[in-house]
Amino acid sequence: MSSPLKAMQSHGVQLLTATEREAGQRLDNALFRLFKTLPKSRLYRLMRKGELRVNKKRVNPDYRLMEGDIIRVPPLDLVERETEVLKLNSQQLAWAKEAVIAEEADFLVVNKPVGLSVHAGSDTKAGVIEILRLARPDLKFIELAHRLDRDTSGCLLIAKKPSALKVFHKMLRERDSIQKTYLLQVKGLWPKRLNRVDFPIEGKASLTTFQIVEAKNHTTKLKAILHTGRQHQIRIHCQKAGFPIIGDAKYGDFTFNREYAKQTGIKRMFLHALKLEFVWQDEKYQFTAEASF
Image: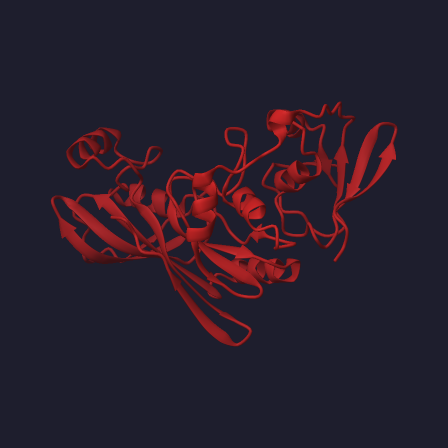
């Protein structure tokens, strides 16, 4: 396995070359692991200002590295601080043990809870991937194959090898290679004839198909299958159809959300990654995470 991020100095500026090990990883996650005492807020600020670049171009924190990418890091004044050392609490350790739905040689699937980010960010020190890395030191490589929103629960695919991560990313781009089924509950009675929403997001073609599971009390429980992978796709498509997801703080009906939470005592977004299906090394896999609603 290649050594992580080969570096050379240039007048105080560091030029880092992404190796096979970092290929497919988010830029911010790769740099957090390299500069363990660098405050996350500082790293994001460097990116916003364009002081930190990849291949001489401005990039976002979620940029996916490719082998051979040249990362320009400006001079950093790093001070070792005890507070930057991340340690897991008992609750996080317990989750890491209980969350694994299945584990194979190349990947594992976990059940992500509501309210836990998939990775660390400016407002959180540890997400799913950081917790798993600390809880599973036996795994030399571990990286997110895809993402779920912080308030979405359910099946999350994790790669255990750089080669597997590359293949999963290719499969996700092809869309038909990995089928992701979601369970959701929306405001209103969803029409039986409305079994697909084909509405572009940010100018790109976007398609979601829907199936009614249950309708009661002026709400509808649905299954949804993503045929494209736009950010917040299901949430946006439900809003555009006139049936926002219950508890959605960005695209939902805020008044309805408050009243529903008061009546039921449940404060969450009703969106859950129910099932993952794909073929891996000529074997068909299907993983399911039961929903709490």
